[in-house]
Image 1 (spheres, rainbow, N blue to C red):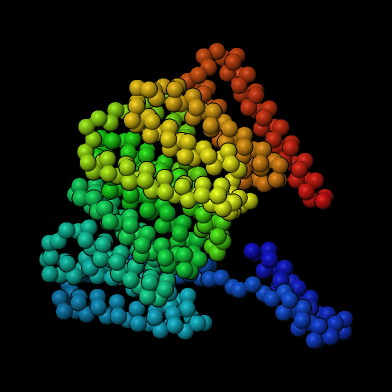
Image 2 (cartoon, rainbow, N blue to C red):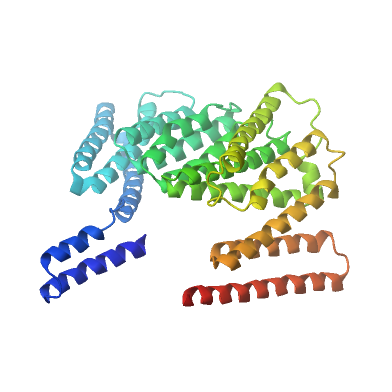
Length: 439
């Protein structure tokens, strides 16, 4: 996108020179400009980021300044300062935000006001000696930021709300053993539409891991059932990959399917790599007899959502033949539900799927996916798959170095083979890259 904008600006400048030198008529220049218009400018992220950072730092400075002199300030003056600062910053910020040239500055002032809103909650509680469940302050603070994010609308406010609501959910779980089961769904339902409407890859990139983290926070029996955490990461990864396919086949938000793919395949490869170790896999998928109803409900719910998502993928891919060109190769696609089924087998029948009975197929799948990435990257001259495939191949060879090959000379041969593969794929990638450039 940056290259496109630079090319368009270059062309616009050249057209002006052509008119001045008499090479083209003004009417022809206008026709060229209409044919190649400048792309729409996106948000000025440099201004937004630095103004937001400045707002956060300034907010912390004001909080510390008040804290240092707080005891000497009368109660009425304290309240006046808190509410005056909130009203003044939000009033000035909204006024500038509605004025298009100063929009980014106004957004920064509103963010500073939201920071002071959080500080004001604690200050008011201190003034009146209010003894309250302290995570509630983060909930109110986060809801305030979310409300402002939707009203303005504002991506920085939504990012702050995402962080605050995630902190609140974690505090409730680990501080008071009170999981807030609605927290992940609330994040997705309230801020997800804003990310989609504004086509904000930044907000979506924060929402996806926040959703995964808060989902883990609300899992029942975290200390007793590590396999449920593993299952959650695996199933959410499978759902993100399914959404990658479904969103990409429809278009409209290119950044969304890329992010779904990034988090989905990242979670998938992490889960697959864990299952490549027999001892770790046995611990992750240990005996599950006597599970509580809540644990079973979470696990079955995950599997149901994963099954629905992949049923839709297969329907569009096989029946409707939709989005086949945009999707990953069939081999990679089909390994996702395969791994989910293997994990289910490991949970339901840990004695049957013990040791290399489970880890052996996982190693083969991991190796096949690595080879597919390397071949596709070299064939299409794409650096991303080549780099990822190389990292995965090295990770798998290191894992098997410690637990499979006892002989040093055999280990040496394995590393020579891996080095040879990496050398060959580097040569093939460079060759195809040169041919593509020449063509």
